Length: 136
Image (tube, rainbow, N blue to C red; front, side):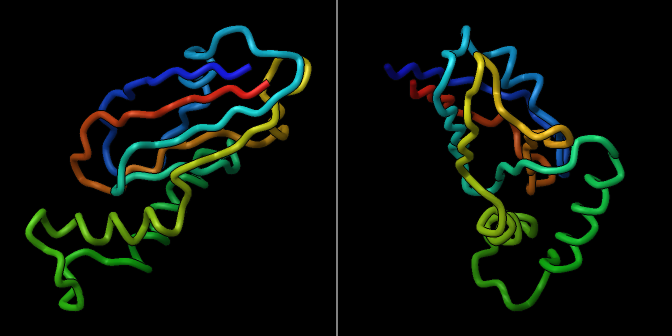
């Protein structure tokens, strides 16, 4: 059986934002076994699963990504959408646009310290659309 839901996240500022609670709240009753596929329909934002116990991890992600892929670099030729656009596309290529999470015993089978994050790479990215597909 396949179920599919599209959700629209509210606008977030640039950075890494926990969205596990939004994903869980948006899901119907989960099957006893299966897979949840999460897909973001954007090229300047990504998804990741990572540490969810210490919020400073998210600050460190933003710091490292900004140092690795700076804005206003002379090397970019795609610049007509703003100085944060091309860096956002490159950062998205380093994260995921699609995640697969096992479903076990009617719940997402994430590790103890794992959370799902929206990686917003634009300064003003706006709302983001996410497709949730449950395969059972």
